[in-house]
Amino acid sequence: MGYRVLAIAPTSFFADYGCHVRILEEARAVGRLGHQVTVCTYHTGSDPQGVEGMRVIRMPRVPWHAEVRIGSHYHKLYFDVLLAARAALAAGPIDLVHAHLHEGALIGWLVSRLRGVPLVFDYQGSLTREMLDHQFLHRKSPLYWPFTWLERTIERLPNLTLTSTENQAEALRARTRRPVHSLPDAVDLREFTAPAPDAVAALRRRLAIPDDRDVVGYVGLLAEYQGVGQLLYAARQIVERRPNTHFLVMGYPGLERYRKQAHDLQILDHVTFTGRVPYDQLALHLGLVDVAVSAKLSATEGNGKLLNYMAMGLPAVAYETAVSRELLGPLGVYAPPGDITALGHAIQGLLDDPGKRATLGRQLRERAEHDFTWDAAGRRLVAFYDQLFAVPGQVRLSATPS
Image 1 (cartoon, rainbow, N blue to C red):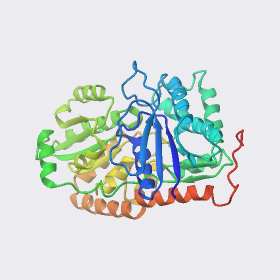
Image 2: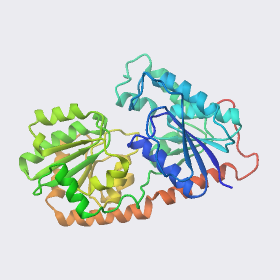
Image 3: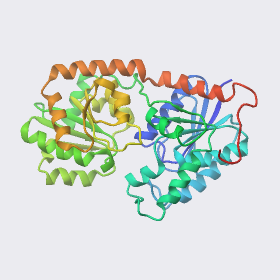
Image 4: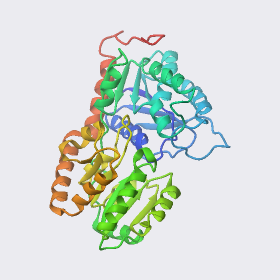
């Protein structure tokens, strides 16, 4: 009989981006191995269909707040109280709690104490760093140090912490005596494979991308910590030198802000903003791309978009961070973080070298097949679960953090 896992997801699951993809793909991978995952999440978001072994339960609906919200916001304070109540009242037996994000780990600790089961914390970045990135908090705010203390306290609660990068794991090991292991983000190679040429051509016509242009693609949240503004400045430099270049910017929520920036830079006729792209349509959209890019500036979060690029056999340009190096390795084309001119030259260098693009794309697909599949990640995740129950009584549920 498989594990019965209660996953705590303090977010509007599912919403076609970042951490949501990790939550979904982990549940899908574990489900394929015969385990059951119940995702307890906010009242907003869509229910993924046809995922074996997974069900979704939601906190009570709040009628005055029905839209999906990304990042930190004050509504989360009472959302998390409602989510904790829903998780505590979840019907049926569970074997362990798998909590995502710091808020989820705090809620999960309470539930694990009530149920007498171990807690696994799926760490996806710093709580305070996210608040800074989303401009919810400033370093000079009187709340900065209380939130930092809360973050460090939460990190000492779980029986086991899993991180999306080894860089994150090393940082956490220096702060807690609890076990910390990396479980890198991965990609579903069945979903991310070359789409039918006719479908790609039809999408290109629908998006009105001229046939004579090479396409540079970005997918992800539209935000400054993702480097979207810097990418548009680099696009201006590239278009001036190479007018047969087009930029496909896929994501949300800052659509109007960046559309205005592209207009002000006089490159709007060389940029297509798609808005939100459903996860199951992402491979088709990436089929339009010749060079993929991530200008992400955050030093603490994962960068799952790079894995999607790799699986699609796309050469990738990224700012050189520990996370991008961990995923792309020597096959990435890098620019120093924040160096817009270098970013532009790196992108243009690939655009001007089709042979190098083809070689890197093929090698990156092979790297994804070898090192970053969700099937392998699912087996490793279950092995971590097994370790918690390897010896009867081995799991120690401390009432206070160590």
